[in-house]
Amino acid sequence: MKTKKISNSNSIRRATRLWSPLFLGPVVIAFFIGFVWPFLQGIWLSLCRFKTISNAKFIGLDNYAKAFQDAGFRHAFWYTALFAVVSLVLINVLAFAVAYALTQGIKGSNLFRTVFFMPNLIGGIVLGYIWSMIFDGILSWYTTSILLESKYGFWGLIILMCWQQIGYMMIIYIAGLQNVPGEMLEAARIDGASRWTTLFKVTIPNVMPSITICMFLSLTNGFKLFDQNLALTAGQPFIIQPGGGTIKTTEMLALNIFNTFNASGGSSQAKAVVFFVLVAGLGLCQLGYTRKKEVQQ
Amino acid sequence: MNTKKTLSAEARRKTVLSAALAVICVIYVLPVVAVVINSFKLNTFVKTDTFALPTGEMYAGFENFIKGMTFGNYPFAKSVLYSVVITLLSTALILLCTSMAAWYIARVNSLFCKALYFLCVFSMVVPFQMVMFTLSKTANSLHLNTPWTIPIIYLGFGAGLAIFMFVGFVKSIPLEIEEAAAIDGCGPLRTYFSVVVPMLKPTMVSVGILEIMWVWNDFLLPYLVLDKNLYRTIPIHIQYLKGSYGTVDLGATMALILLSIIPVIVFYLTCQKHIIKGVAAGAVKG
Image (cartoon, rainbow over all chains, first blue to last red; front, side):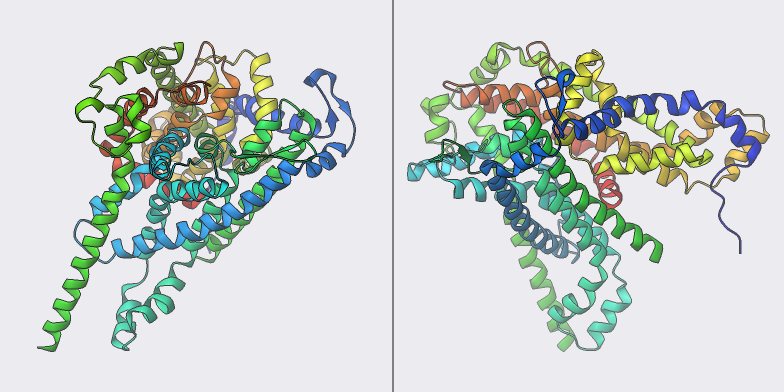
């Protein structure tokens, strides 16, 4: 059996290696400045008490304990998890429905696809302000505002994210749906399977890889959400607790870390590490899963 | 007879589906329409009559646009300029440097290359909040806090996805072509630029589009790194306008938002095919 060669023969490789400073140098230096060093320093600082980086003092896991004692952080954690799950379900069901409809060979599919994908290109901050104007416009009929009730903030953000993400997931679903073997659908039709049976027994099992990718993507997107959250409600309305602390009822994890950084550097860095472990865990699951799929193919 | 009937039923079903999707499409563009109509409306009416057309006493003409240009004590043109500079420089730098590194990694495949590749893949799953504090401090102490130097930060933080996509593609290019070039006397540099780069072009377009979309819309990284009194990108500027206390001129803000999404929509409509392809490639891989 012939194995596929991917790296050069020795002499060429040796010649290439002489040029390594040019080929690798810029990326290695920038990667060190922009990722490796800040990352390692971030982990170290999460174990320190510090005002500035130069006077950091090692204090062990105290920051982590303090982070979990923070009621605002705990609230943000559950709020984010709830948001991520609700948006995951809604975005994927709707995106799949749209993709399914667009692959039925109807007129105007291309135009529809263009329109549905468009919001994806607009940045999170701008999106947030567009929708805050719209929601306030609607809610002003009932003399209220999106900043006044947390349930408006929650569902407002869900609507915003659906508007933005459905088009994105739709593209992935369309690619998956186009790969469903035509003979299988034909066979199901000849066997007299109804439209719904075909959908659930033939189509969906065949697009499972796309479904998994989209679910992971929308879950991590939900967890990492920052710009839209900041621009739409910025955590409002706030609840003042009897103990004096404030809970920002629509504040998600990323925003909570950002907002508390100046006041409590150490425990916020610890929160960031917890956040990283959570998001990276989800991301690595996804990578592992897609890798496995590629091997099987 | 029977087939004809099912055919027409099928046709009717498709028409209904088309009509339903058309309705959803109209709803889908409404937010953008709302931005357009409110950008021509006097500020006092934006909150009370958000969905009314700007007619009669509500009509502000181009006043909002003129006002928006110098809104918030910062010329809008300047933030457009900085956004363009940062986006173009960063994308060019990322495309050039990461494609070279990816080719080297795939072809030389030494232990160091493998470690670097693993780190790049790892960096893709690290959220920005993890490094935001330390990164902004590092950028400050190295004086990378101007629009002309921030592309280095983007190269560092954004290298992961680009290298991942390029390495995947380089591995699919048959090696024989490069070997032939080497036999014909091409050194590595010449092989790379005159043989590999032309083949990499489609992937470069995909990666380039992903990077452009990321950098253009990015808010937090430039917000933390740049000196905000001197340099504001469009998202930072808009956040400043809305985030500042006191009365916000919504009409002028909407005018600026409209101005900032027009280039995006033009870009989208002209390179739609590449954008959708690039985004799909990035999603499936990343």
